[in-house]
Image (cartoon, rainbow, N blue to C red; front, side, top):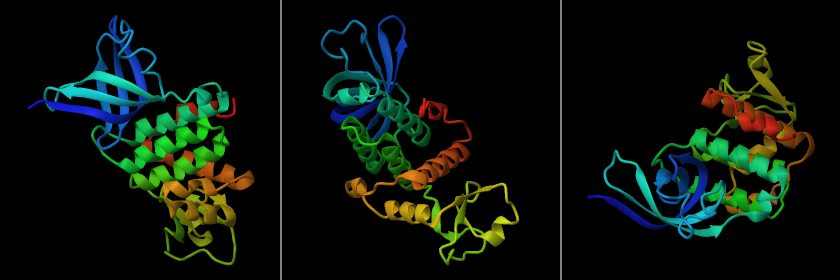
Length: 251
């Protein structure tokens, strides 16, 4: 039987032209995760799709799918939020582009995780109201890797299992996905980056809190820079490719 879904909340992650009048759109949806669909006649539409399939828009969509192997066909799209303020703020728009790239790399078709959907929606709302874009990005990255099953361990050394103590700086290794103590780091000094105790404490606190409480965290200064550097390098290692939108963050 064909699959038909109506009134499905969705965020637009990608939208490309297909032929003279159609678009291929990649959504991240509540309940079902990533979905790619064709919007037939999107360029000619004056009602169904006009100004609705832009990047980062929040929609309620309806689609059909004739078979498991076929491409979904978008039938309706109701605009819920276009995040207009985000689009007029260049640093926020660039940050949203980084978040979009991480979402495309970290999620697969039909892999459902409502936490990822809620996190992405929280992030866009935060950027739209003008929150500090780097701070929002840092919180997004810490929670994203948690939700997709690649939470780095900032509590114990990944080599010997000991807990770093005495308030000493720790190091983070992308290869092991966690902290490495001084003794273990000495075996491979080029694989780790030093983090202050304040940074590791902040990351662990963020990891333990739900999305609804992320606004309470205000990383700044060196802590913020270390979080961003740490998770940028970790993502690049996991995905085995460069994060192209990252270079525009400070541009």
